[in-house]
Image 1 (cartoon, rainbow, N blue to C red):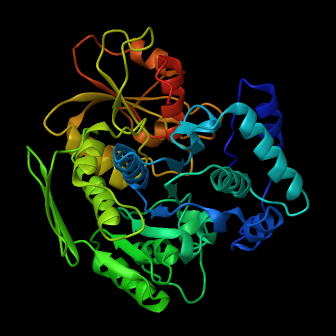
Image 2: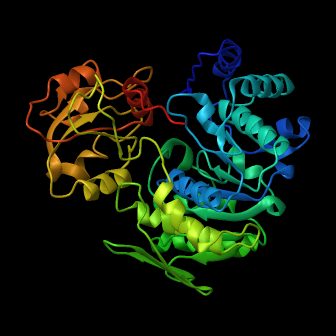
Length: 431
């Protein structure tokens, strides 16, 4: 499935049209193409400021948001690469604190596409090459780079040890099964252990590999990867500890203890993502960040379409409307914890390659009604996939108009593409 992108700038759109025309041979794995492309561009990935490289199934984007906020609170200039974009392709590339400008983006994409015209690179490989070019050409104090898919074969995994400050692995879960669980000799057969194996592929010699705690299968795979690659493993509950209460976040490691505020991002799970960001900063020595900057970053970090309350608009009216891009069972568990003890109306749109019950089963006790909507521009599940009680609506606007005026909140969820469409329609554009 292509990751479509649109721009109001004609020069950018011309390059995005070229991106949309790319296709990758089904089942192609490996880093050979991205390495060849970067070589033609002068290997910009080797000239980056110190990099914080983050993998994971859930929470890696939020972890990146906390890292960025903490670094910037300390006065640092920070480059950030995340995916996917929600409204504008520019969201993927943040140069020294600001979304990349259209003129620079158009020029970079043209440069990369021209250089790799005979290599058949993917959408993401071109994006990452353009990102690394932008980051190598603009001075900064640090980079925060989110893994796109998996870790071992992700295009960002061309980063070498000498540019890395720390690598991190956020929460693990089953997602993108077609790619991350594809049959292969010499890899774990247990699904969650295989996921840990793929994420641990970002480990590098002498670089801190900072992780959460996991079940035995993925834990063993991550420990094995760290040992074989001579990475410096720092795993939660063994090398560092964190806990949260209603009033604050407590963190401890061999360097001491920190008493910090709770993250401002909604959801109890954000304390775990924040703790991982803190641990990544504390287990490296390339970039210094003060305790006060960490505290400020916890208060100011933002991450669009992750338990985000939409502003009042013609779309939402006066209702309490939340949007979340979650689409797998672990995201469902996080949403269930956040809305525990209250009822809500669920407006759901899910891609056809996702599990229809991923959100419904964890949230079963909170759902007052289900309305299923299409995911514009993508193959999606029909209402029947969500059970006999699911209603159907052609658009989110129709879904909201059809809900009873009972004062219950509304959650729009199931797809980042749908979430991005909601941000655009409600005027809550990511900046």
